[in-house]
Image (cartoon, rainbow, N blue to C red; front, side, top):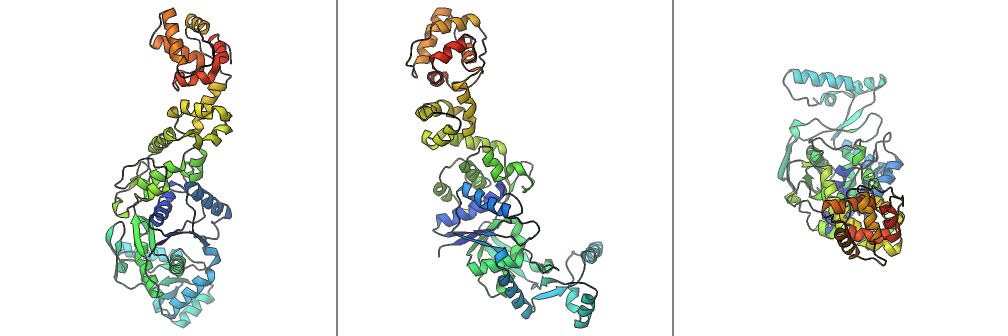
Length: 447
C-alpha cells in the first residue's frame, strides 16, 4: 500500500531548518514510494497560533519544493476531538482531575524528596461524585487525563529498530485543559486515524509520546501507524534548534540568498550514512532517503557547511537557470551567459554576482598601484572586438614592453581594472568591461 505521511507544524513561529528535516524526510519518503503527503496545521493553541505564521509555513515549504497532496487545520476539526473524548470517557479511559498546578508541583517535590519518580498518583480517580461537585462549587474546573495501561508498549521503529516505552513510568497525560482546549496528543491521534496516516516519521523527542499515542489509537479502536523517530538537527554546540533562532528560519535563509536545494541536501543528509553533498533534484534526494541509515547521534548543523553546499550548487548552475535573477541586478539578456560563465566560480550565492556586475558596468574607483605600468597597458590596449584570448595577448604585450611579469604584472592590472585585489579570471571579465572603460580605469578615472 502506498504510504500516506504527514508534517504537522504549529503556526506559532517561522519554520526553521530543524523543521525542514522532518518535513523533507516525510515528503521524500512518500515521493520515493508513490505515496501522498499531508500538511496539517496543529493550530489548537489559540493564543499563539496566527494566520501569518500559517501562510508563511506553506510558502516556506513550497520554496523547498514541498507541495502537499492534502491540507487540513486542526482548528476546523473540534467536533471530531469532542467525539473521541466522549468515547474515551464512556470506556473509563478519560477522567477529570481538579488539582491546581501549584498542588501538583508540591506533590512532585514530595515524591522526589522520597526518592520516588514524580509521576501523577491518580488521586482524582478516588474522588466521589459529591467531592467533585464540591470542588466545582469552589470554582475549580477539571482537566482531563488519559488512563494509561501500566504496560510496556513495543514497536519496530523505522529508524531505531526495536523500541519500547514503559508506560508504568509515565504520568497519565493531560489531554484536555481546564478551559476545554485540547493539548497536542489527542487531536494528533484522531487526525492520524481519521485521515489514514500509515507512517508517522518525526523527531526522536517524540519517542515517549509514541507509547502514549499507541495506547490512544488502541483505545479508540483505530489502526496503529508505523513509527520512525529520526535524530534532530542541533547547532554546532549540540543545542536544539528553535523557532526563536531567526537567522535559521527558512525565510531568513531564503532572503540571505541560499538555494533551496542546499537546504534540502543539508537537512536530509546530515546525520545519515550518506555523505552530505549538493543534490539539485528532489527525485535524486528521495532515492537516498533510507530511514534505517539515519544515525542515532545528533545531526549537527554547521552554517559553514551550508555555504560550501550552496557554493557547489551555484558553480554547477547553467546560465539559463539564473537569467531572471541576473536581470534583477541589471545584467542585459545578451550578456547573461557570458557574465555568468565569468563569475559563477567566485560565488557562494547567486546574489553575490551583483558586486561583480557593478565592477563590469561601473562606475568604480580604480586603484593605480603602478602608474607607469598602467600608462603602458593603456597605450597597448588592442582594438575591439575582444574575446577570451584578448587578456593573454594584451598582457604578453605589456610584459614585453615593461619587463613586468607574474604578480608585479597581473596585480596592478587587476587593481586598475576592478579596484579589487581578487576576483574572477580577468580573461573572462575583460571583454565584459570593454575597451572604453578599461582605458579610462587604467588612466585612473572613475568609470
